[in-house]
Every structure is written in structure tokens, then in C-alpha cells.
Image 1 (cartoon, rainbow, N blue to C red):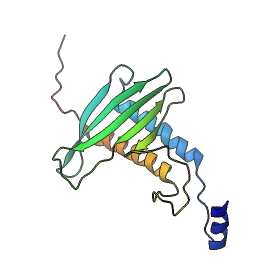
Image 2: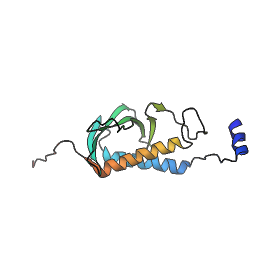
Image 3: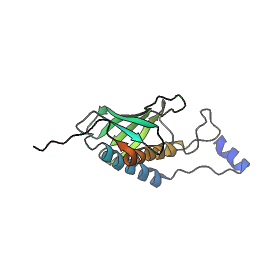
Image 4: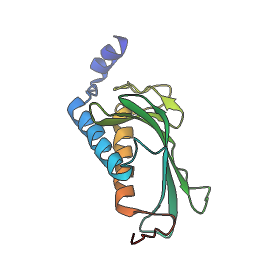
Length: 160
């Protein structure tokens, strides 16, 4: 309540989450994730490379850490092929809800249990829409992987 009074005195508007947009992003992330990892129900991990407009590439590893009847927990890890110290990719834990066909980030670099709204300033320096930004980042990463992903080994097909 004190924070709301401060905001009224200072004339700041309180951030209001757009739940429809946030859920649409998580639903789209589910579709993107299934396009990348269609055998998620049978396989435990997926590894592939990504190559953007630069010479630097990265390796993406998606690993299942828990399976339940309606949900799957997975870890998304991206590492640089050249192991350059100035390029640091975040580690993500994602909960996939198969019954509602949605995927949301539940952990981002050791930060867990994100709130839908943060008051600013706050001790951890989170943005008011931190949870929305993290799920949008995950969507952008998946889209980039779909556009620029490649197999790490040569794939051969047999004519049986």
C-alpha cells in the first residue's frame, strides 16, 4: 500500500501486466519449441548449432530434466563455439504445459519465481515487466534457432 501512495504522490503510473499478450507469447513459445524439438516426448535432449550474420556460432542444448503427465521441465543452454569471454548466454529453465499448449520460463540465470509486476526501484533491479521480457527473450531465441539452426554432424539418408 505504501508503494501505491508513493506512486500517486510522484505521479508515476503503475505497470499493469497484459495477461493476454503474455499468454499468447507463452503459447507461441510452445509451438516454436515443438517445431525445434518435435520428439520431446520420446527423447531426452536435442543439440544443434546456430549461425547468425557473423562468423561466431553457438551450440544450443535443450535437455529434459523432468517429465510428468501434463508438464515437462527442460533446460536450455546456449554456449559459444569459440568460448569467448565477452559472450555470455543465459541458462533458462522452461516449464512446458502440454495440456494447455504453453511454455514459460521459470528460471533465468538462477533467478526463479518471477512476479508479474515489480515495483521500481527494487533490491534486485528487476524491470516492472521482467517476467514478460524473459518470455519474449525466449521466444526471440527460439525464432532465431528456427531461422539459423543447423545440424552439428552430417546427416545421411539411406535408401532402404
